[in-house]
Length: 81
Image (cartoon, rainbow, N blue to C red; front, top):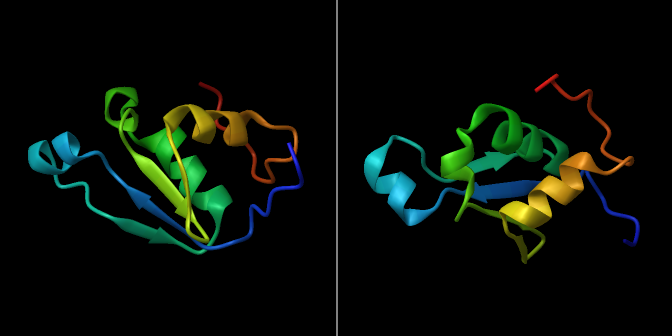
């Protein structure tokens, strides 16, 4: 994977089913790293499926988000899960 900019701003769009069943709505983050931390560590795993991360007009699905979160280049400490 090419160098990825974890400091870029990002938007997180919960899946449509989640939006109907919960209070989760579009959320804007100052950095991709913060958005990934929220999505992977704070959202219930069942809600992550169908959620989209948007970074500079590129969209990432839940598997791509996990890959970015688990990469050695991820800049934030990870919560023990």
